[in-house]
Amino acid sequence: GLANDISSKPDPCEYDVVVSSGEQVSIGLLAMAIQELGMKSRSYLGLQVPIKTDGAHAKARIVEIEKSNLLRDVAQGIIPVVAGFQGIAGDGRITTLGRGGSDTTAVAVAAAVGADVCEIYTDVEGVFTTDPNVCEKARKIERLAYEEMLEMASLGAKVLMHRSVEIAMKYNLPIHVRSTFSKGEGTWVVKEDDEMEEQVVSAVTYDKKEAKITVMRVPDRPGIAAKIFGPLADQNILVDMIIQNVSVEGYTDLTFTVPKTELGRALDTVKKVAEEIGAADVIADENIAKVSIVGLGMRSHSGVASKMFETLAREGINILMISTSEIKISCVIEDKYTELAVRVLHSAFGLDRG
Image: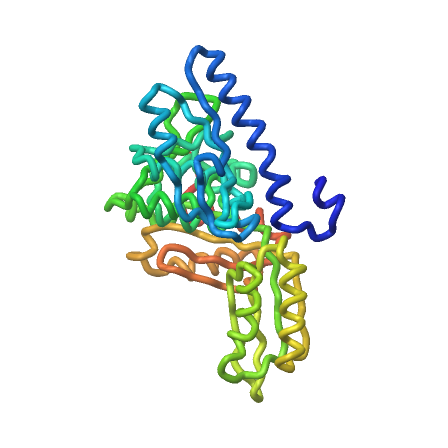
């Protein structure tokens, strides 16, 4: 808020300096609280560990974690408290890891020190079959494969961020997502096993944080897609779903989705490219949502896609875009139908509790 009060487009480097300050306060207070309980503790900023990252401010990726200080503390009976969400770039500047960066830090540190498990304490009991705030029949999942959690996280599930799951999968590090307020078992995110494929669909997710951009009457010739998406990549703007219409009279329409937070920058970039290549127009739509089903069982069961499409059609929900992988199907729809779509799909695939 302070940054945006001063600038309509805050410098990402200075923005990181501002938003990383909260973690500095938190780790100092937590270290003090642990000391008050009679134990030794020491706090570490990302740059003190150090947690080395690339230079993509506000969305930096971890390159390396120096573990010697942390292991030395543990050997001496000192509990290290590490600031999440932040690191240090090669030029010595503070960086932040973007949304969910604290989870990413936790899993990366656990992997670096060779921990047996990384426990993520949150305000829910674990990972649910869908958002309980949308569907009261949602139920907690006992075990999920890394691949399922990775898809769910990238598709809008809010419990874990996909980058933290990527690291856990790479190092085969189990994650236990559990409640801060109870001692009960949460959800284990682990390596896939045979039992997991018995459930065709494990979860229904949704994401209202994307926007759709359509470039109209794009000349249909080799290299045009690269001209559009190359500049977006240079701006570190994430492109998700892409569809291209069949060419008519040498022209085609190209539609793709980007995060709503990046829509302004994306439009500025795409409009410049559209003018250069002779496209007719650029249209944006923020009133969309992506609804997805995820499950390892999709690999070995047919008819899942048709069941999803039929379920949505019965409710009069029009599908604007479709994307698939081995274990997920995503549909872009009008955002006003999001909650309805989630509930009917949750029921259609047998995920309702009781």
